[in-house]
Length: 168
Length: 82
Image (cartoon, rainbow over the protein chains, first blue to last red):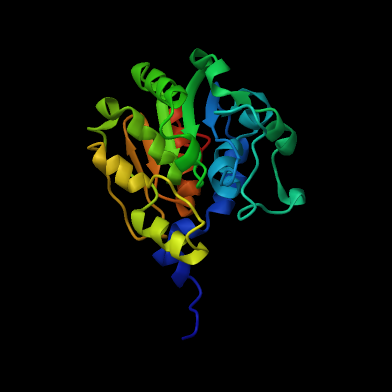
């Protein structure tokens, strides 16, 4: 069957997101910080191409406001299954920042407006179960801050079932 | 809320073999915890916002997830200067 121009976009308009990112989020400024919760890279790494970098495309966040954390202090590595060429990375000092992730238990959670839990198979090793993750998410929920999780990162939400059980 | 599907995890394990360990499945864990888990097609984009909680089903949802999350944080649409 011949591909019909426009049909793909009309069925799944969200499949053209890169344009939205580049044109819209380029001008977007986060008011304050977003705590980005990755995970240790023991076997799997973070699913960095989209799930981590998507939120970091906001320029201010990419510079200073957003802090990458990990459960352990070892450097965070993107999954080799998802990584693209270094030259294509739009975020300044991305690889250097992956080398300097903070240990989650050392982070002052009160400094952040939101937490973003990235996905990747590593989440099923490192983010559940974890007392540090539980403490962090319960802080954001109790303070009525924004909590975001995507893909395998959603597994972290289980640690506070009393808080999240009723949520859609 | 949503997250990566059990169907997707099981397919990954079939694809990459038994050494492709996934010690906990997000969908199973969330359902056991009593959450209101929902999903769409395994590889389709799906984002849910419930107040301060934003969840995305998979990597295909990452772009829309980011837009919704940034709006939840700022109160403004990231696709409009207004």
